[in-house]
Amino acid sequence: MSNHSRCIVVATLLSAFLASAYAGDNAEEVKQRSGGGNPAAGKEKSALCQGCHGEDGNSAVPTFPKLAGQYSEYIGRQINNFQTGNRRDPVMTDIAASLTDRKDIADIAAYFSSQQQMAGTPITNPLGEKLFRDYGCLNCHGEDGKGRPANNSIFPIIGGQHKDYIVKQLNDFKSGARDTDMSGTMGELTNKMTDAEMEAVADYLAGR
Image 1 (cartoon, rainbow, N blue to C red):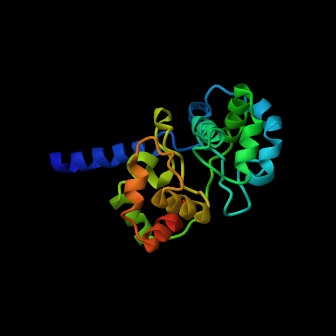
Image 2: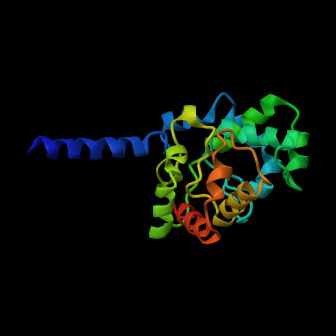
Image 3: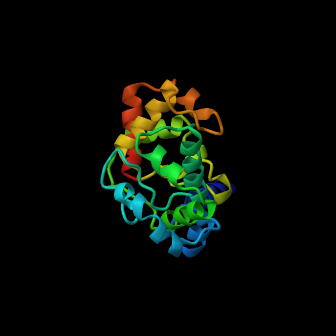
């Protein structure tokens, strides 16, 4: 085998490894994304949340986000954003306001993050996948939107999320209705995207 061929093989294996890192449901990956909360306690404390987000974090309503396997730190930060008014929603704003104990929030977040990672019905959308890569979305959200290592949990897992929810969030970033991106990337990126491109990317991600 030539040196060039060996390089290709190594690069392929390395890419496969990086793509899978912190993007699954083995014990170490679950531990990494669940943070310091108590998932067992969080199951009971999350009873009110389960009405919209599902018992295991897989919501049945396309406009309510799935939380299953999401980074606990990200979930906790979004609750805080609703509490401070940086994000607004007729339902979540009031629910977040009722969560006054930080330990309760950590436990609830840990419960949802410890569940098997959200997944959609597999589909093929070559345009959506191409746009996801061309726009560099995988640099923050990981291969197929399945997340980056735990120390990058400011960027949510979006692979397997509801299409309708993804489209709404992209439009909210574009319009400025949502301005909670700590990296400052989403507003700039979505302003480059057409409605059709948003639909395609969301369709692709929903099937991961």
